[in-house]
Structures are given as C-alpha cells and as structure tokens.
Image (cartoon, rainbow over all chains, first blue to last red; front, side, top):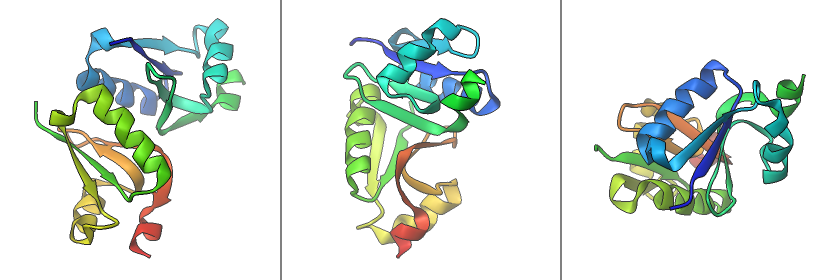
Length: 77
Length: 77
C-alpha cells in the first residue's frame, strides 16, 4: 500500500491525532510532515487540498481533515 | 486490535470517508454504524464524544472527527 501523508503543525490536537493515526494504520504506512517546521511543504499540502491541520492525505489523494488544530492561514502566520 | 467504531449518517461526506477509513485500517478492524438509521445508537455515539459525523472512535476511546458531514443536532433532527 502506498503511504498516506499526515500533515500537522505540532499543536496538541495534531499530536493526539498523529498518535491515533499511527496506531490505527501503522507507522510504516504514513509519512508524518510537520509543516510548522518544514515550511517548504506547505504548498504541497495546499495543493493536495489540505485546508486545516491535522489532515491525512490518503494514497488515492483524498483529504481527511481530522478534528481541528489550526487553519492553513494560522500555519502560514 | 480492538475494533474502532465509525459513526456516520449516510451523507455523501460520510460515505466517502467510510471508504477511505476501511481502505486504510481494514474492514475487519472497524464497525460501521449508520446512526441515521440505527437511531438507538445515537446516545452511545454522544457518550463517546461524537459531536458530528462522520467520526471514528478509536479502541482507546479517542474521537476523530473526520471532515464534516452533519452535526449530531442535524442527525437527531
């Protein structure tokens, strides 16, 4: 299975969701990207359709916004 | 692994998220409950902390609200 990508920004909601997602789908199946730190990947996340974090982009390109930590506008600051 | 429970209400957002979740974590690891139809389980979902659907309650009791289909108030009508 291709990897999903979990975008987050280090917020408490993000960290909690990250742990749940890793437990559910397996650490080997998900790439975790902190776009609060790796800001060069913000554009990639937006192109994928991410409008808030945390969000999981599935291998088939669907975006699952999980709970609500911060909007992309907040992340970009 | 104990099963997660995916609560939904049959809305298009719910159905799309359901397919993604089943693909990601495996059909055998998730119980799908349509609380729009099985209304006797609405109270159970609310007790678990579900405030909108679709939502996934993990085996450890965390609630992941995925995207947004409908509020519990909408489901209860």
